[in-house]
Amino acid sequence: MSVTLDIRLKRANKVYHEGEVVAGVIVLVCKETLQHHGISLSMEGLVNLQLSSKSVGVFEAFYNSVKPIQLISSNIEVAKAGKIPGGKTEIPFEFPLLAKTNKVLYETYHGVFVNIQPQKAKVAPNPVTFTITPDTLQNTRERSSLPKFLIRGHLDATNCVISQPLTGEVVVENSDVPIKSIELQLVRVETCGCAEGYARDATEIQNIQIGEGDVCHGLSIPIYMVFPRLFTCPTLETTNFKVEFEVNIVIVLHDDHLITENFPLKLNRV
Image 1 (cartoon, one colour):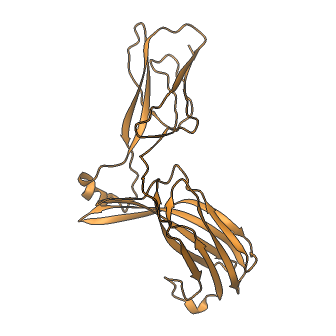
Image 2: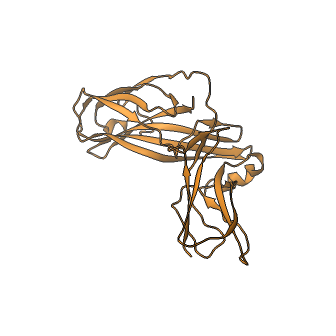
């Protein structure tokens, strides 16, 4: 017997806030008559931690002092009549439709996003302007060997609303070496630890090219980056755990020199 089970939510974008009702219908497709004793839907919290090798030792030290982030899974149970025993199967979100035959349960997978209540206070954007030259670069040993260049620009906000794009502009005033590419790199920084020590992991979560080739000098190049919903969240800072974000403006020169300017960001939900 082939049976498929699907959940169709009334809200197309599948984004909810605390206290809202997740409403929809369950569609059961079966070519033959199916007897059952009811259909139940449940949700459970699951712990999913991914640690790098350098973080394992520190995590063991502070494990008992912080609650790990929990992910939500959904269970759909079809209790069949007859001699087949009842049971349940875990259904993590964000997987395609899956139908099982000759089983007690028929599973369907859906991604649902639950946002915490937004802040009511207004967010001050804190814009920043920047000038990049060989003299402003840090962590450079052979500064004298660098080609001469002058790059200016600004970010409209470093204290950002997560539902709004990061905007600004960058201008290449001059460069002795042709430019190969200009990119925006979004980085998530996770820090965890306790008195025994802290571990810091930085992960690139998005890279957007805003200029290709030797761009015109003196021309304003717009900066426009939408924060990815699955990989960003409001900036979080606790005693033992922090989730922060940074954006890098990366200029790649044709002689393989890499110029990077880093800007810390604070993401807010309002």
